[in-house]
Image 1: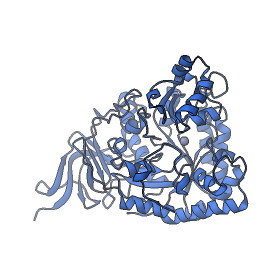
Image 2: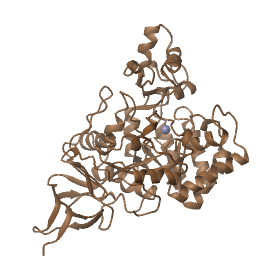
Image 3: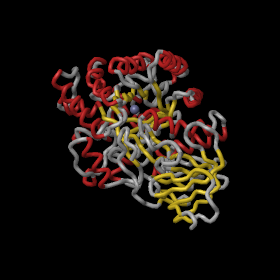
Image 4: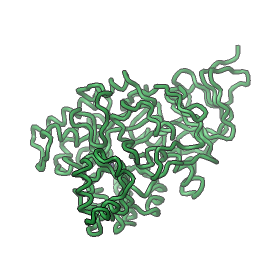
Length: 498
Ligand SMILES: [Zn+2]
């Protein structure tokens, strides 16, 4: 009897996710697991045979920095992510989580009628299981969302009381019990920015009981970058938890090059035995709420972290969609006011949920951070509005095309480690992130000679080329370059191989 598989991927070069060089091997998949890595007999049969000759076969990419908490429920195809090879997203970053649900929409408004109700993190993960998207979903607990809930919403410019801290800890414990991978903060945002270091340390303490990590969008990414990183490391030490610095960068022209010091700071912490790593999206532009840029004094020509209005593009403007694609400077010129005033007027008339794309980083810094061994990859994608940042569609193929093939900033096997095995290890996702027999069959098959991002700032919603196959839990989600609309995703729980 010839052997039978559900899927055979024949003749590819397998990169196993450990950073090891590629090896010629066939893969056989049965159900949701990799059954065979090696030579598979010519007469073996399969439901689907993929000819991978000339192609790379890798674990599915794990997007450690996602904001798709509600997007996966309202747009279950999650086209932007799966077409670039992302098989698992880690949502709940930058302090914005899903509990309490009432406060859970920091980034982008979505159609609430399509979202099921939930009370707890466990309830949210159950909703993912009942209404599965095309990719797997893991979550961080958002400190800011809990803080808004515990302190009553609105403008909260005070530290939390002991009772409020206990409330946040109890939400966090429930979430960790249900399988959340850690807790995030977004310390430039409301209301996280009013929390003290002591408050965050107290709230974070249950993380140590579960071995979960602390991820932070730190308090400053420009002039105060080193102090901000030092605070994240202090929280890690005092709470006894591992640290993930979100979207490592030096933002604002005056701060370019500062990442040499922040990298040295991370290396010193690691030499002391602290588990500090970071993530990065591979672009010189960021994307966030315009309100946050204004509140942090970042719009205009003055100020240590300033970004000129000509470098700030409107991605999503809820009440004035016709402004999307213009810059803050375009509207400032039209209205004959300074950039700072124009930004405020855009928020007042366009909506406080206005999202922008801001050009604020140095290409040399982006390369240096990418090449550093503490850096893993995340998109930080915000898939809302007509002009979202292209990172939501192109981060992974951009690294594989531009930074690996064209510029040689990192090797292909190193890039794959940063996208797969490294995040699976740090975020404690057993069964994922590596190609080995018995592992879950989250897989990407791409052409290393042609894979390319084609999304741009002008036309961001374009899916990449050179990535013909993506499998999630053994099912083809992308087949010969086309989305199959299969909903094979699952909730992923910390430490659970399922
Ligand atoms: Zn952030």
